[in-house]
Image (tube, rainbow, N blue to C red; front, side):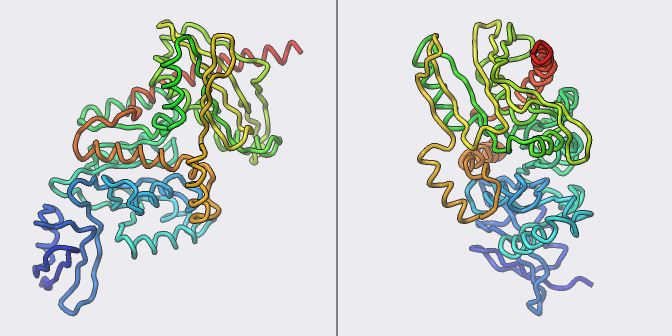
Length: 424
């Protein structure tokens, strides 16, 4: 026998009905006049049964796939931004975390994740699941968005599972997949069911990128160099750990953001590359043992200039031990610097200080890129709800182009730098 239940809808009406009707109400989402953030279900004795986060009109229902460890995982930072209502068009309703809800629950980070889970369930009524198959079906009329922030190798499978879960838009963290071939298969799989894929290449919307492009456009004959730095120690142990953990290589990991910029704004594709000039004085390649003892060969820093067949020219510089400031520089034909804008700039540093105090111990790059993560999520979520184009957000085609260029450049630059070492 079904028992009577009540539903309390924040800022809405109070209704009695059976449990089966409750499930139909959730399925239909016909909460007339509701601007609810969640639904609370109680029995006749006022005993709480469940609380379900639901999107308001104008919001996408977000499934975060791959939360990771609090303070460490990119997925976690996506979650806290949405839970803090920093992306008005995105309502985080479900978190799928296979590792910490599975074999990783008792390992490093497990206790921290459990604490985050309990607080998020209590404060925000977000559902936690071990797999996408466990997420409740999407309700009629609701636009569902998957934000996939898991391991790159798992992304092809997670894309298919997200589509099966009723998602019409997929936000896919870079580089999207381990290989170009897999990205192309994913593109077709999504296109066949009219699902859109947007990439989390946040530098496409960064202030320093925009300002450098604007300055260059206003100064004919100028040249742009995108500089990406990281804060690894310049030691064999630090770089060896980095090489092993990012075994796909610098050009398919750290510098892939810059390659996406080149594909987005400078027509750079493998077919359109006329020449590549490697700065051998700056660039460096090493073979180092990782924590496992296995050796890995990768670049610790690179600098190169690409000229396209459509007569565009742009440079990229990336240094794993270059510090915590990235920037874009514009120079004249003689190489003299005309303009530079950094990330973070002076305005951003005030926000960084606030975030450092709010989330002590979190990864530093979360804070310097905080506004850009918000911008990308908001534009993608709004696209999911309204169907309007997400301005300057990288598509799956840009991801394919960027990864293709990374696969093309890696052996070319390895050969160039190997020849340099051999001649010394």
